[in-house]
Image 1 (tube, one colour):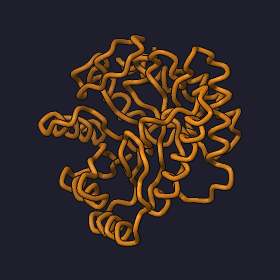
Image 2: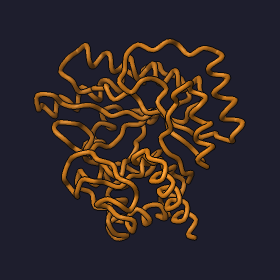
Image 3: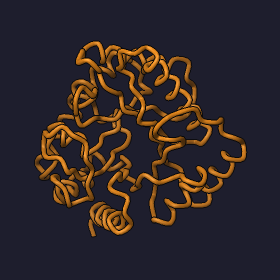
Length: 279
């Protein structure tokens, strides 16, 4: 288990590993392009070399990319679905050039409320993304908090999508704030054990590639996405410690997406390291 956080790449992609090293991180996550989408120039050989040199200099060999927020593989709009497929394919290619471990994406929303059709479209999009893909970065779908008609808010729905795609290269990112808001309890060691057991039974721990570790401003089952510093939200420190020390997860990297203020982030990392190392 390596501990990391989402890091800004403002000023050039090579600045992300530099900032991660300054924070004492063991892995990190970043956007390789604007999270709001839009056209992006191809990576130059110089950009790739600068980034890889910075990772090598600071000893990073596991790091992750988050796809833009505009992705919607479940939209009834054909152009939006096709654009989302193309964006993720580009992101996988860029990430493979940067030796990124995995790219994670949200699935999008079944606008109009036809969830069954949305699931079918999302699975079709994921199949199109992976068709002919031979890069090194893995593709992950991220569990959602369940607001509105957003897909992927239950273990069962994620399992159904994985089965429809039928590709072992597709993995899962679990966000603690999201799953808590969608109704999976994480507040006590017993609750954490139960939720891990449900995940294993319905999805399979072999599909879990990374965890976004966040406390939640939203209550259990509130179905909205609001991250909080560790121990300051509705999940609480006891549950998060239980998750960090769960033996089933001891090889899974943890990425903080808590609010990005310096003091709060430092406290989050201190709690994480003390919990993992049982200090």
